[in-house]
Image (cartoon, rainbow over all chains, first blue to last red):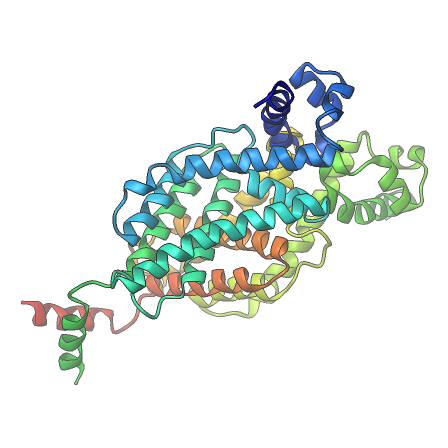
Length: 210
Length: 210
């Protein structure tokens, strides 16, 4: 990285928590100048507009969040275990970036605002869903998850429940809602697990009701 | 209502959708002046500050949302049916106010901002949870819902999942996530229903595994 690129990256890293906490309209260039210690001209040398800086700041913040939430998933074996790990990781490991989930912040902030940020938030949700869908699909293929499971529905339920719970937990300054969401989602996962005994149990149940 | 009170209410109703769409920082007094057709002095005659107006606008928006989402629940019999009705109503009946859920918007907007708005959002969530908890508790008392059910956990799960799904559905301009959340929540409700046959089934299962 040359000196210009290093400065650019530093501005992004310094601006990211401010945009994440205050939103696009709530974060002024004055705020960015104070956080970076640079003059306005020094910032605009690297970014064409406040929106371009906000977009880079969002990508940086989301990258950090995804890294934290994904953790060591590469070491986890089994699809259901992977899903459990991601749920537990989301609940147990606070975001490294001040201001909460960049995805939710930007989604709420931009749904009536910047179309650039809106597109990035939409992409962030699509990527998250795709990662979960792939895990569920692999689980179905490998006989760990029931065939009738809808991978998209499981993915959407996990994301919606965790994001809604994080919003509530932050406003209430309490981890209670996140823990409740975690307990419910783990139970939802229990319903899609294909257990080796499933066929035997169904046969027995049939015999009883017959 | 005297003339002053009528004007005050009109300012609140006109300002509510703007605050709901743009947030506290993103909504200027210029925006409010344009929406109401009043001069700044005319607005400040009725409100001590922009924050006081934003607080009243939030209460108005939340009141509208609660009314829409509650619908005709008075006519619904049975606790589980009431919960199902509220979930379906949330998913099927769009908010009358532009900008999405005032509760989530204000929660996200104020978690690093106005303490007044933050307190109101927190109260809004507490009230919603209390309404759901009361329904679950009544259901347990009347033998419709299993005794081991945690009313707070059910309430928190419903709110978190619906709010997260609404956020995703709005940013994706698709009802898919809301419908997925609805399907999952209805299944979660199925797990807490106490069926008249439950005891008989348990006895039979015991006889089989013995």
